[in-house]
Length: 425
Ligand SMILES: Cc1ncc(COP(=O)(O)O)c(C=O)c1O
Image (cartoon, rainbow, N blue to C red):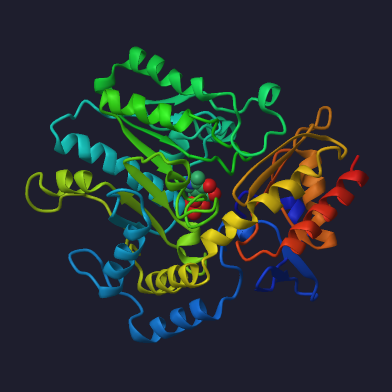
């Protein structure tokens, strides 16, 4: 099972049988309040009939169409809709089936772009410590998750990493963007001095890191990265697999933070997770450069299920739902309440930091002596058993409820977490 303690699970299975709105139901009929939008992906809430109907209808109309040397109209319609939500001119879209595939696609597009410009020494890819970019070899190579390196080795040659921005000593209990840490972007200058700008193709970061434990970018940090990349001809990729589609109160983190990258990776919320889909949005200049170089197939890349018709139908219905229900603005308007509620846990046992932005919050607990991660697992299990789904990374709780969450449900989540913390050894 993915990212699961298999033996523990077999002995203590936790199953979800159905879902609707803000709740999952277990096979025994217990209701579980969804504090994590599934896995950061069910932004419009569960079982939305408009999306269900669109998928059902599409399955009977066109079940599959190859997109190698062929196309189908829905794919172009979704590309246009997604492109319209992207900042600046990032409206050239390539479809994949997951965040991991979107990341590998983005890295390959960066390499293809430099090669098409005749700058083929630019092959180095820079990620960041604690970065999570999925599970492909490209993603784990630029990612900075220690367990990946320990288990699967060094990954792609020619990668390097910026330092992460987590700094509890100076930023603990910050509401919104931390004040300290913009200067950590200057480490990119150090990597440029070490490797030479002419060898670096791209820098990839999560504008707000989710899976590694909710790291909100320090004020000024992303702009500093943008400026350094611009000064040295390096592409900047934002991995917005989590932050895309309203999670932080705007279509993208790029829009919310006012910093425009060259490439954005997307997945999860693009279809409200009803059918797997990933996507990469590129600046027009990147698309034009790659497609105008040479003849024949310009980007030697793609997936059998790129722009699968069911995913396209789900995406169109999802994007219409986001628009009609103004869900990105709703997330923004709930942010103040969410922030106040989560910071209300500041005095709770074990809590050493709370951080938040948009409808994302991280609650960091002190690890149990000699057993890092155990407290997080215990809290996850206790809350599931009392009816709340949270996500834990080590001893950090990540909350990311569907954007349809009610203020009272936010209060319920915090009350349940507070109660569980007070019983936790
Ligand atoms: C920032 C980021 N990139 C990539 C991924 C990988 O997405 P997937 O699990 O769909 O491959 C994730 C998953 O959580 C993510 O958070």
